[in-house]
Each structure stands twice: as C-alpha cells, then as structure tokens.
Length: 375
Image 1 (spheres, rainbow, N blue to C red):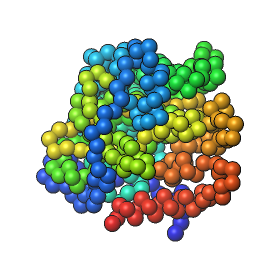
Image 2 (cartoon, rainbow, N blue to C red):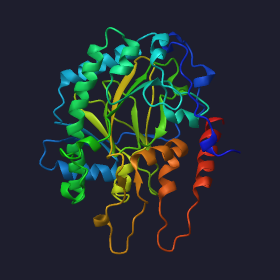
Image 3 (cartoon, rainbow, N blue to C red):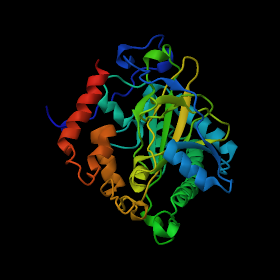
C-alpha cells in the first residue's frame, strides 16, 4: 500500500441542498455514531473578570482541555451579527457557494473538513475558511454586496486577537510562568509582523432527517495552541471527558450559554506544557430540527517559532515528552496522520524502547480510520 502522504486528499464538495433531503444518503450514513456513553458532567464556566481566573483556567486545561468563558468583553450584538452573516453565507444556493470553492491543496474558501480524507463517509456539514482578510473570498459570493459580511468578520477578528493573547497569558500564569518567559506570547511593535494571519473557520451543520445515522464532524483534536469557538444557541458540540482507567470516557455536550465562548485546548499547548494541558477530543453532532452554526478562531504562535516543552515545567527526573515543532510543520503532520500526529513527535522516556517509527504510524493512521469507517 502506498504511504498516506501519497494518497490524494478527498474533497467531496456537496452537490445537493441539505434542506431538500428527506433521508440520509448512503454517502453520509455512518455505521457507528455513539461509540462512547454520554455523560452529564458540567463543563467549567469561567468569568475572565474573576481574580482567580488563571487558577481556574489551569485546572480546566488539565482536567478537561476545554472551558467556557464569560466576561470576555466581546459585544453581544457583534456575536449576533456574526451569526447572522454566517447563516447568510450558508443559506446561499450550492452553485453560488461553489464559486468560492477551496482549490485542491488550498486553504481558504468553501469546502469540507480536511479530516474527511480519513473517512469513507461524508460529514453532515459545510465549512468556509478565512485566512487573513475575508474580502477576496467574499467577493466571489457577493460581487457587489460583501461589505456587511466582511465587516462582521473583521470586527470579530479585531476582538479575537487581544482575547487570544489574554487567554495565553492566563494559561501561562496558571503554570507559574510570566509573559517574559515566553517572548512570543504577547506581540510587540517589533514582532507584530511575525504574528500568523488570523484563521477563522465558519461551520454549518444543517438539520438532518435522521441524526442518529449522520455525523456533523468526527472526533478530533485541534492543531493550534487553543481555539476560541462561538457556537450560537443550538446544541451540538461534544467533548470526550473522563478517559482514565477507573472510568470510561463519555461524550459531554457543551451547553450553549448566551454571550459565552468555548475555549478548546489544542495539541501545541499539550506540547508546550509537556503534557499537563490536555488537547481535548471533540466532535459535532447534528439534530433533526435546527441548523447549527459555529465560528472558530485558531490561536497559534508565529510560524517560525518552534514549540517545545517548557524546561521550567520539568522535574529533576523528567525530560521533554515531545520534540520541538513549528506550527506549519505540525499542521503538515496533522494532515498526514490525523490524531496520530502527537504520537509521531513523542520522545521516548528513559528506559523506554524506541517508539513506532513515523512510516508505521502513517500506515496505522490510514488503516485505522478507513477500516473503522468502512465496517
């Protein structure tokens, strides 16, 4: 079998209108949707204005890998406009949306999740990716009427940048670190040009005639330091929680709270903290009556900066659990290896035999995901 890196990514753009379907077609019918039990654990909700916010965030990062935030300052009316413009985009006819289709190997525009390449069944969802300015892609959809959409995206991005820095500092503080110890954490006038272009992902999960047979977005972890998610008022985001020997992992639904934002810890924070912060496995499910939308903002380090475990966090008998990696390098690994990317950069501990080599991990990732999907 050729290596996974030789396999072309599969980009099945939707050629039909979800709202016209009265049943789930075989292309979207998943054999197993509920692979873990469901739990009613309460996802932490943290007010950023709380004097104890850093400690609470650190605890949530270690125990959950996710939390909701209030007191973040983002105006509610902006969130309303953001949701309205996102729904406006996805309500366009399919032919119109395809005018902004993501090109093969491209990043921006309309399409489906990259992890679709690891599954034989398609997701019950659509996506639209914006890197940097939204204007070029928006003009493909609305040649003469993109101002409101672009205005909402740009204003939201202007709030996300400082919020991302604020959250990063609180996460570092929870580890006993200061901003001076991580020189890229707060952009300065000298380093602003090094900051990565903001990445915004718009998602739509249409109402589904048989939600028990469809999947909005399969389980995965994010490649960023963390992701800030606006999920609107419709339930659908689920986190995998409690995966330890004494208690089986459970899918926990994150309840939408008016004005709140969800923060998901990503793989790079897991690396940076030498495994203390958990990169949360999450997914999106669909429902029978309501279309759900979400807007994700991915926060990461400058592209050239190598993320590695912070030496101060290691004990006297503990070394780094992962090798250093840049964000672009890790994104490439993630596209090839899916959820095996972290394992591919893990360093062996003292006395531990050499881990599976990268080619074996690639083969295992391909076989596992395709095998499960085709059962």
